[in-house]
Image (cartoon, rainbow, N blue to C red; front, side, top):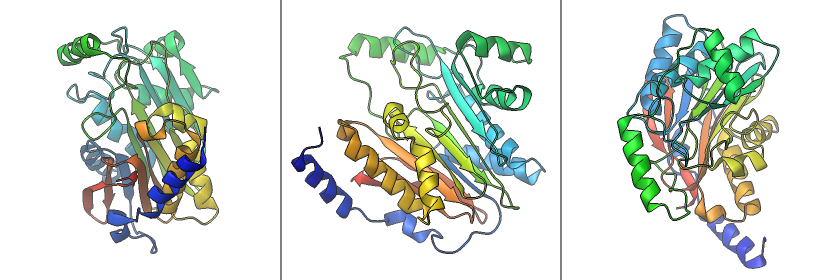
Length: 321
């Protein structure tokens, strides 16, 4: 329940938080050339590879697919693809979506045995009349389109799961820079075209069958080539309930900067989600002019920003510092 005391606490938290690190980025002037944003520290490698794709003649859609593929393929990253953290029954189930500059989108959810769900999502977008496939149907579709079945549970993720299972107290682990659940990427090419992708193994120890925000167009990811693009990370249920990424883009449409838009939707989630202080939610966004923004509930959220020949990991501002 939104009590007066809770409202005043939230208002105080919002008033003491500034633009911080992001104020040094180009918030008022358009940015020339390609711009790539992605969530968390792994975004540095993803951005570098995505930029190489652009430089070698790939499209901005290729860029956001191949950039996150690199992280999906790394078994040492326990949040996506192979080596992703399993659910409470020990199964690795993956979610992903992709969206291009033509407003086309594709998505897969509760996909098992395929390490590159974002590429399956692209196939759904390009080769079917549908947007989302789930579960066994998504797996069968992937196999028919040449994807190979693999064991996604690594020795490390299995050991971590066994330890977590033994220690489980009914609480989900904190989502922070050491333990997060998503890589999302939004990018703009030199011609100003936008695309985005989002891929995850979901919250560790989730109920078998749970799907978060990452494959949901408008929640985990949204792209409007006339306006901007945004993606989310963190506790997916809170993002879904507020159509998070679509709302960020909608605020940009109405004249808000990407930074202001991310901040406003994080505050909106905090006002409406009862246990907001116990979760993490973060957004990254850019507008058509290449200006970037990011904001989170908790401190610790970082993102990678590639523009003007520089690729930097940046600490996001947060509601709770």
